Length: 202
Image (cartoon, rainbow, N blue to C red; front, top):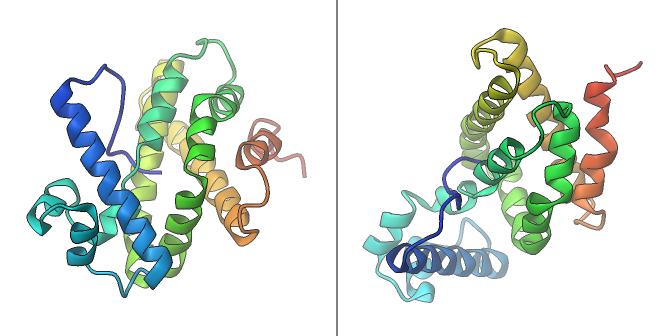
């Protein structure tokens, strides 16, 4: 999950067109990645398949890597968490959002999510970028947790809690991908995230 897109406010016509273009570029990129492999697919091929110019591609994605790394999940998760009751335990709030709107997004994007996660875990250059994107995700979670608790997002306990949540996310997604997506990702979250609030217990 990364922090590049959000849908918090209604979009105007121009923004809707831009979103459709972005989605078309991403969809064609994933189709080509699945057919020919990530390394063998060029930006020119993606642009041609999406019926845009290479310069238009770069207006939406700074590099081919960003087609894989950019997504709307982190902002959607943060928005959904901010809508949960303030006194709800944080892990319960996370699980509720993953069973609700964010879970629906993950299910909708299942095949593309499988592909992009495989690429991010196996491509050497992508793995390096993935570390930075994981830090972005931790910062997003820390900001929400700080808001809910009235604490500073730089508080070490807040940062550790956010890092723990993202670590579990990463481990569960890796497990899900290794099993070819046969398990329900939202159910994996529901089953294993409570390990954090129970204090491990072993």
